[in-house]
Length: 273
Image: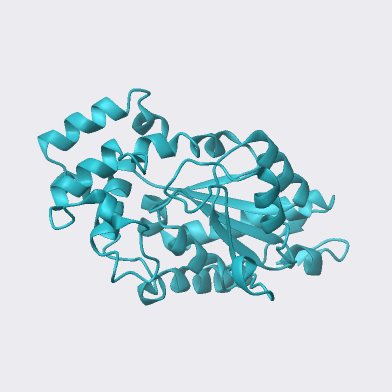
């Protein structure tokens, strides 16, 4: 990368937030970005020790909003050249705060039906996962995949269904300065999307400083190759199982399709792009 006006150091110190709808491949995005913007790790113990930011109380499977001040405080910890990951629902206040914070905000999303299948397996394998799904007993009997999947789609008394939760995230796809990335595209073309993400970030950050930036082809190839390779290391993802695209077709029965139609009255699938 070349620069005008000595912007290179400032550009590479951009702050990043890798945001994702739960079970849409947030770890895949994080692994791709990590070579150029490693995790922001907290220095204090407890709540702020993890490189994490979220908008919902207790856990990201609920729809109970945390006070925006809590989320802003956690997001504001991010340092120059570092990254936070998280599950951030959309609110106008949070969007404005993150914009003024000057972060590079990448939002990953996925076919909601595959999200449902992934969450169902996450619940069934809760004891085995590094990041266990909270209160898996809410989805009993967990030995019955079809039953768990039905509850993931339709929701339970404690946890809303996939479509109900997506409503809190969908608006990120309409925010011009936020880069939306489809999980399916990232899996199919990691090198191409590494370039999209890197260029977007560098250009956006330079624009904010009133500068212009251009890219040396060789340097760009080196950086994006490293990013793409890092994203393929599945062993570093604590919740990766198969990552299969379109696996819902094998998992959904007629009952699940009917439940989905009842839940998706606003036709979110067709609006994901």
